[in-house]
Amino acid sequence: MRRAIQIGIAIAVVYFCFSTMRPFLAQISLEMGKGWMNQSTKTAQAAGKNSARVASALRGLKMADGFFRAAINLTPSDGQVRLFLVYATNLIVDIDKSMSLERRNATHKRVIALANNAMAFYVDNIITWARGMANLRLGNVLIAIEDFETALHYYSTWSQARRAIVGSYLQQLTRNYQRAPKVLVQRLEMLVHRFPESREAVESLGKVYLNQKRYQDARECFLRAGNPSRLTPDLGLLVARTYIYERDSTRALWELCRILAYSTPKTAKSMTQVAKTVALRLKRAPKNADAQYLFGVFQQDKMSDYNVAKQYYINAFRNRMTYYFPAKRLAGVCKRLGQEDEASSWRKASERLLGVLPKLRLITPSGIKTAHCLFVREAESLSPIFGKTVQDSDASGGKAVLFSQKDGRSQPIRFDCAALPAGDYELSFRIKIPELVKSPRAPLIKLNADGEGVRCRKMGNTSNSYVLAKEVRRAGVYWDFVYSVSHPGLMPYQITVDFWAKSDIYLDRIAMAIKAD
Image (cartoon, rainbow, N blue to C red; front, side, top):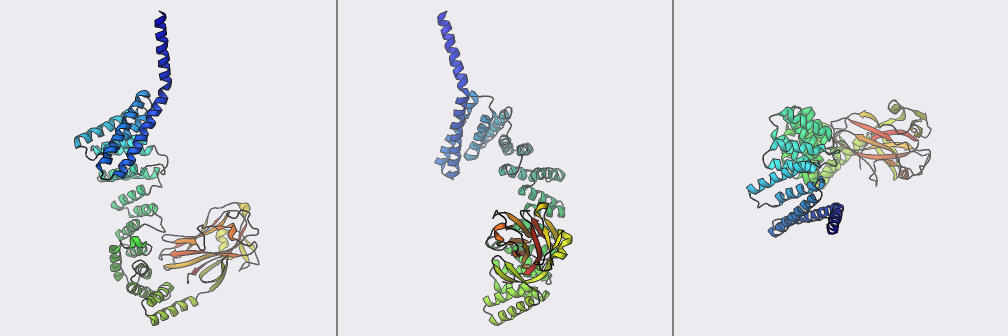
């Protein structure tokens, strides 16, 4: 009897110890499996076509599979362990290219079974994505699309979403629902609504709108998918296509020229077909001065074809005899071509055009400079837009707009401006603060020119677009701060002032000038 009791106690102690150790042993097995899986993934990525390394990676994944199964046996209700088993099995299919079709399909079915089993304990986006990929490879496309949608549902923000899931979902959705356009649009709109910052989803929705002849909606998507002031060539061409389909040849031509002029040297070399199209369209629309100038910029800066650039600059100047920028560039092009007399003639023409503009003396933190102004908006004319004006003897017009720190930070204040000829400009404002701000990097105020294709950045050795407290070297004195603006022509734009309420600020004037140097 005593012997039986001793055996029972021993069995109970062993069972208790094993039960207590089960989570610990399962964790060890899980970490061992993850280690083998991570190492095998790195080996496979570096293997290339090296069959020995691929075989080594597969052996590692089989070891990982064994450890994951051991962990599941120890803790059957732990769904995360099952997640890693699904992932490892899926990797085996991706790595082993020599696997026969029959074995491959059997492994896909195994992935689906494992995923279904895992989702009884733990629902995760990676599990559903792996099941979706397995269904896709087995030809169950509609089921795969549902799995991808389910996987995306578990992400709260786009920054967390895996691009592989989104890419797979968009590819299959657009490929398999072309004959059901309403369903396709509905699903893409739901995806964009959930992840509005997803450029891939917005661009895909725009392409669907384009196919359905919803050109305005398509254009809005393409502009939203990129940066309107600096569209990628692909998006820019899509925007231009919407205008071509709407038979707006002037706007389409301008879009194409803008893409070319603002392209990088690397992308410009691959856009020769676009350049040929633009050249043909310019022959049909020879009086489009902005397009002629922008195409000349492309030929000069990106293709280094000075003879061709010269001809387009001449065309732009002939269409608008007060156009400064073609004259200025013609002086440089002719000098580069060794045509000194013609270069001198164009230099005099550009100086004559500058001479008729009113001059403004700017006192900037880096020194004094002269601006050749297109317009100057003083406090009196700005008061309907910006609000409160005060008497100030230091201001150029005797009055200044007051941005009060007590009122707190306001929404950016905007006012509309008419389109400028395509070219480079200098936007400036004159401000002062009554007292220096203690924090040197505190942002005070920002000026910006905003519009389709318009680019604006603060001049000087700074990457910050705001005027910082340290840049105002002396209080009680007006300083001019200058921003470089590239305007592509044709389109109106907005000037924006953004006040941060770190100090009282007096705004004297805002001026737009030709960038002459």
